[in-house]
Image (cartoon, rainbow, N blue to C red; front, side, top):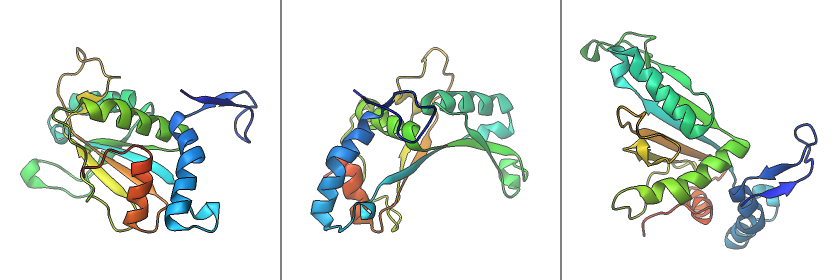
Length: 196
C-alpha cells in the first residue's frame, strides 16, 4: 500500500511510509502531465496543495451540542481537529448573531491530505447510492475544484451507532494548476471519478 523511505529532510530521521497516492503522483502523474502539456521543468507540473473540508451546522444557534457532534465526526473523518466557523454578520431571520459558531472546517496538507484523498476516491465515493461519477464543472477558473457531499456517512471511519444526524459537507481541492483543464487532468490521473 505505502512505500517506506528513510529520512527525507523531515522529522526525526525515523523511517516513515509515504502515502500511496503521493507515490503514484511522483511515479506516474508527473510524467503523464509533462507529456500531455509539454512542461519544460518538473516544477511547472501542477500539484495538489491542500484540501479543505467544511461542514455547516445551522442548528448550532439553537443547540451547541450539534456543533460539538459535527466537529467530533469531522475530526474522525479528517484525522485532524477542526476549527470553528463563526458568523460574520447577524441574520435575524435565522436567529444568528455576529460571532456565533455556525460550522467547522479543517485544512489538510502533506501526508494527511494524500491519505484523505485516497480514502475519498477509493472507499467513500463508491459507497454513494447510484454513484455515476462527480460533476466536472465545479472548477473556479483558477485550477481549484469544489464538490459537495449530502451525507457524511459514506466514510467508513464513522461508527453508525454514534451518529445521530447525517450532515453534508463541502470539499475543496486547491491545486497549483494555472487552468481548469490542467487541474481536471491532474485530479483525473489521481483517481477522481469524473462523469463522462
